[in-house]
Image (cartoon, rainbow, N blue to C red; front, side):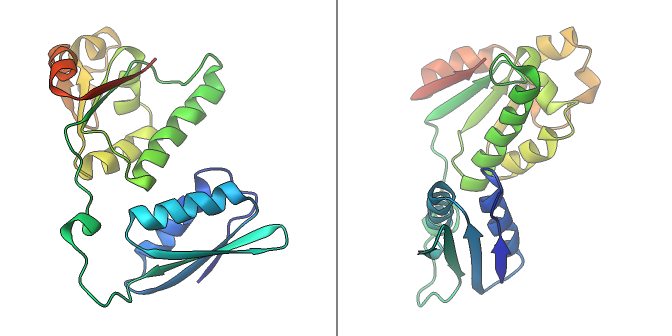
Length: 196
């Protein structure tokens, strides 16, 4: 199967490859991209998913072949599903990234898409302030966050914040949380990252 992912911004080439690979049990997916960064990202995705890959430059394009299956030995448990350690708490206090709102919403969606695609997951995500809109009324981020939750990430939305925005009945992913999740998390987790 050949996918033409030229002129596609990050992380679209990886998402296209992931979708194609999900439809086969064994085989080769070849992705054509027009920049080295996309070729590198595809190689990283393949490695994180325990697939073999090979990138070949052809003129101004790159052909990245990703091999699924063809394993002589069964994959180890770590290769099948990398476990998330309780090392990272992610706190999201906004529904945008940066000051420009329209661009910020695009970047926030891309951030979670990339997290899902590369399986670089925190142990827990806590949404607070306007960040609770991402788990309630944002139709673009809710499905992505549901996928991330299904991959084992614990997701909480600040109850006070849900009440402030009148969104208590609209929580679509994760559970209602409290500031205790943040305070205790700062003690229990090795790292805490704040967005917003």
